[in-house]
Image 1 (cartoon, rainbow over the protein chains, first blue to last red):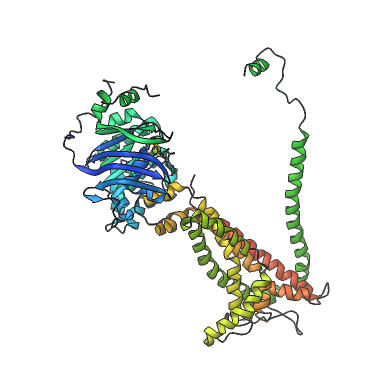
Image 2: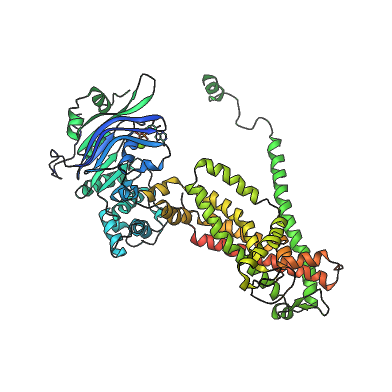
Length: 275
Length: 313
Ligand SMILES: Nc1ncnc2c1ncn2[C@@H]1O[C@H](COP(=O)(O)OP(=O)(O)O)[C@@H](O)[C@H]1O
Ligand SMILES: [Mg+2]
């Protein structure tokens, strides 16, 4: 795996000095009585791209959806352990999940634009958040940042569902950007897209990492290798009672994970020898 | 697998033609088509039955008198045929009903679809559907014996007549709430969850998500629900006959007794209008008008839905 292309020096940033946005300690997540994820310790660095990889069902989405408290919406879902957003307890009593989601945006696996016009899709977030400023320029800025402006500037009133899948996903990214979040969470944002659309989104992520902290779940190892600064490798372990729990196996700089992992399971997974 | 491969391998004589005729298929097709034809034929039959006496009616009473005057009393002597009082009463009671039923029904639908736990929903939905099945004579009596006296107590300045459009309209509204609520809930429940998640992820509250994302996405279903409810309200007979009365006065004041088109048909139809008399033909003329009004509204709403619906895949 020496020849896997790791995010190149064209975006020079010192990733050694980790300035934490999220600090996760001993996080477990339950769905009812089932402990889907157990004992995760993780730190997400400011303006870095952190990738979460691992086989399906190992709890990547579950962990990701704790970062913006999206799991609150699932009856029975309950985290244990601690997640700090900067120095605030994300699950503290005083925390308003709605405010959390405004500051921490999310892009989903299946592009989910609202069945409204392109313009209204972008304007929705700023409107519900009561943001000040001229809406036209908020919309334009978000679409420019999401590298979609040139393709849609002449058809802002058209229904968003008339766009291609890749454009829809960039629209969803623009929609997330429009509320000026600090973090963007992405759950397999390219898994429903073709390779060309995927490349566009990956380029966009690199671009966005200048201003935003990005956490991306992907089942595509090459993608993690290409875009991320750090990689967290998860897997599912079966305990004595025969229950599967997601565990974080290894978390390190992406270059190390892909060239010199310290855990045998990581190595097996990235070399494709995973069972 | 192997045996099958052999059977279809090239060189074997087995043909791709159907091995035995499938009569069942054609029988079912004929039965289904007959069922479809019966409902179409019934509709055509109703139109035809309405048409002939209606034409006869208009050969005796001019369009000008029917639509151009405001005194209604086909059963009186001298008879009057100005249809506006009963049109106004019909529309007014329908309007009151809609004003009651749309907010209430939509609120109930939003609650059931977006807020209620699955357990609550499982209890509530059937209750709602039972409510839709309550005989309307019950609502009518309730309006007359309970709601009107109550309204008179609470709002004496209204000067309500014993029979009045207000109480009738309110109860027609209650009657159609379950239709609005149940059908709207169906179409809101069909909105993909991804849209809700997309909204929450932008920092929208549950209320905003419901009102700005779910309701617009379910719009065509909601309009269909409201239209069906309005059709029921326009045609509702028992409640308006009992609580609204039969006195056809040209007024917009809902505290008065009013006769709707359906109430007139019930009144005239249950009286002694002999076949061929002008009173008898009037029933059909009013019936035709009611039919056309419902038809136009359905057509109009279909256009509306086409124009404003939000399509999601
Ligand atoms: N809403 C839910 N209710 C119950 N169990 C769930 C739910 N979502 C996920 N799980 C379970 O949690 C585990 C981790 O799922 P998930 O986080 O989606 O994995 P991944 O994203 O890595 O594929 C799986 O065993 C899955 O079945
Ligand atoms: Mg997942």
